[in-house]
Length: 147
Image (tube, rainbow, N blue to C red):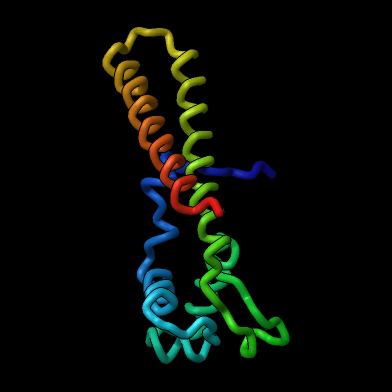
């Protein structure tokens, strides 16, 4: 059976995974609190979200690298924390993914026959625009987050 995959154009600038209300509420709790570790129950009390929804969101945030786990005895006893190093790596990966999409667009442009000048021009300008934005973001990542 063939696996179907989607490539999201410009994930750094259009990543819905990062901004769902559930993820936003959980991340807001981590950022707004001086408390370093949270259990699922503590996140439930702070966000008023459904426990299963919190568990799924924490799994996703863990897979992205934004949240880490301090204790793994059982899911209830685990303590979650905002993983700053993982968040930085996630940001770098988003930029890298976006640059990969631009490489695909460059290859597509090479294969076009040139009959649709306006679309060809749009693709070229899109590549240049996002390349400049991603280069700037990379520069700022290096400036602010490389220890």
